[in-house]
Image 1: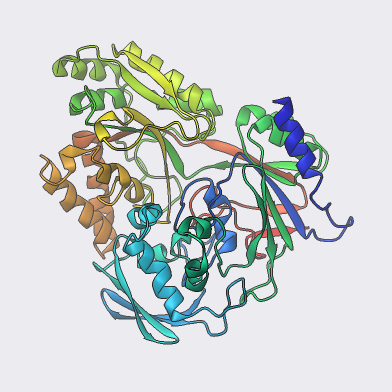
Image 2: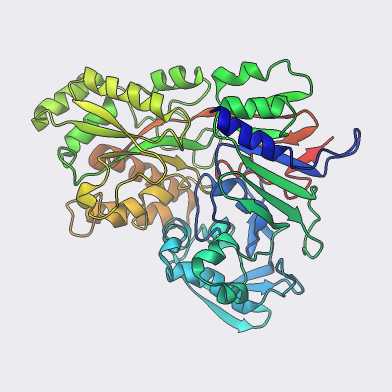
Length: 524
């Protein structure tokens, strides 16, 4: 621990100091738990990369960060019109450039989207499975016009095109790279900041550049530093070594209280910590056992114990204050007596149920898994935790040897009622395609019902009908399939210098930290 602290403190000393007192800052130093090594958003789309990708890249359109409901804004497309229910024509912004000074072309747009649509590389599977699965192709009409084709009429097509995985990157730079993996680490994009310096597992420096087509960003330099422990992030902020920190749990907030020049800001993430059931592993092939394990979870106790009651103990798969929230809707319940009855009916044979712990990635996941194991033991289930670290996960194939109950998260990826369910439990999601849910896979007992409800909840163009179908879909998943159980919605704190005015965006997935313009962040 002392060695780790010494390394990051020494590195922080290399960062330029803040501008003179009274002048708006031009350098921001952000301390994060971890960040990835992939800067091409189509190649990596997760909690870590969400922290910075939005500052690096532009797509055809963007979403307003804070308006509820959201607005669709021009970006690399200046206008658009619907040619048919499945074809949308976009006029491209003339004169827009990539970081290297080359002009953005219709060929770049076609390549950027179609590489994920066609899954040209295994790294694009997440971009396809979570966002671009309903897109078919991009047609070049002329040098300034493209037409984007959907497979089905889609009420969410603009929302999907505004996701960072739909960003437009340089095809010329990709073709010149030594390998796709080299490009993933050092892409050429078109956003307001570009990559200036990177040291794996330590820091990354972004810089603004003069050729950006849009509003000049407020910062000249934006640094992200990997500081694993929350106590170390707090120390770095208090000592003035960073200006902004993330992921501080409620029981550590007091370390920030009363510190001169520092403030904290609480946020309940639009994200559930969840665990998925691998139905190919005995005894999880029996839905009654999966349902019993869900009924045994005391979500209020988890919220109280981990977050002092400041988070949310979810009653269904929706997020308070967000699109699709239905007051009073209760799907998930705590009922240990019913859990015991289901286990008895299923003839549970005492097989140990293994619950994965990935605390390196999800804060307090170790404490949560320990508590859940105790809850399961109280209803008569033999359970234990299995701890994983970076690089220690078992191969996904064969699925019968993969994790029994895997830790995961269900963020609201986009501002819609399906924003948390669709990326994780759709037919295009990786657990489904991996084969963890044979009961709803093609040929499975509930396949037709699953596909019918999903398609209505996802594609119906009438908002009221879509919400009804969405409600039916979520209830079907919990009551008839039970592919997962939801734990809680975490409440965490940002810590920051008191000249910073920042609010987590409402319309992009949790952990997104836009520092692009005055609407995203202000400095006194």
